[in-house]
Image (cartoon, rainbow over the protein chains, first blue to last red):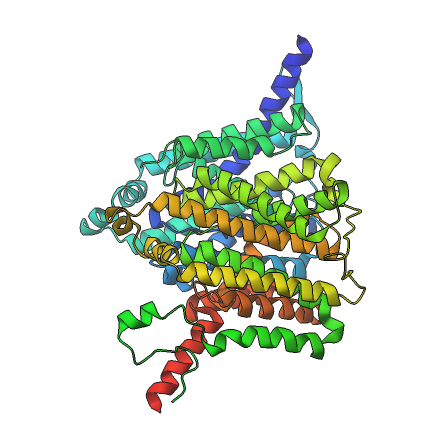
Length: 290
Length: 333
């Protein structure tokens, strides 16, 4: 009995850490897709770039983990703002196929650039001494890094939700997702809103990529390998929603961890099957509007 | 003036539609090139067979993406299903190649029909995600079912008997090239008839305005499922050809990269015009062969950049650009 309990706690804990990373990376994708209807397959690139920036700053310049994450958030956020203005904005009215192709092109370019600069091997993050080792939470011990990760993520998610629910900027985003024309006619500058939201979402992805560098290994294949997971979170959760992707990330993170732990011979098979089932049951996702 | 690109430019639109199925001289150009390549580039024939296989695969995608307008990122599922089916058939049942092709086609068609039954109910992003999921699902299945597929090591020991008992596969890839060429030729005749048939026209209608097609009573879902299954069968044949000519099947036949790559080839050539597959796949495969030798690290970068440029400035691909250049030239003269 004790063993089963220990296994369940372990699965829940690791699944939760995984889910939080998936959510932080994907939430921006959900909001920008809901807001602009833009199929952005290059979202994983921002997470990957954030991971590389964080790891490099820490390993080569000895920067503390927290500061490196903030730098990654700011740098990638600013970079994505430029990209949104110069490139993405030209394709807002384009067909789905064109958006897909355009962003796949960006992914290819980013992967090649990253491989050129950092080489083909995965980057190992050397965790600061404070974050390595175990922490005793009363009934059993947990790895410090993952506990820290879950804590930081929860604070971040709460800030984000409060920001969207309570601030003027958040209200504008919600208005624009609900009805863009109406929002525009009320005098909301949706273009500026798009750019800022895009930058915020990409910055968050970069932050998540850096924060989770020990869970989702930073390698040139990152932007393609994990793209499917980010898209699953968004599609299953529902576009334009904040809570939907959170539930989807929890489902995905915990069930994927459980599958790999309990039935490793099935691998990710179950995940894809479950996703197909959910999308057939609710094509717009769990919390999506039809 | 002799008109290369359309046989009937001076006719009324109705006549042009009616006569669009007539063979234009320029449509034989790819075949002349394929035959010439056999004699001119003797040492590149293995690459040549790869190109012919990719043309076949891209052509199958064109039916779905270009004609029916279904945006898919999981077309490798059918290619891979065909490749594995033909490979396993050769290992465990018989090394006879033509029946192997049939096995590949049937495998592709079954996967296409079953997944189409499910995913064609949806549209937009959900549809895109489901095609992606079906591809990933099969990839994961092939990876885990290593007792039959060989898993990550790939399927070994595929040996193929001579075609019709007469032509055995040689080291230089001559038989393989001719074999692929003939299969592609028959598939091209079939696809050409299909897109010019009333069925093909109704697909274009669905692509252009699905609401109106529904309103005039066209069985939209049935049509889409039919073309999806046909396309999957052709992709399965392409996969089977790959398995037979390389005598190996690896997990790469089922990856997301494979699905993305074939879309890119088709886009480079131009979608919805049947010959985009010929132009795009040939250019892409040759560029990959040459560029990855000169610049193995940056080769992906150039492909990505080219893709971005094509989407921004040349939406019809190479053939689209050619069309525009010819029109401009004609207006001037």
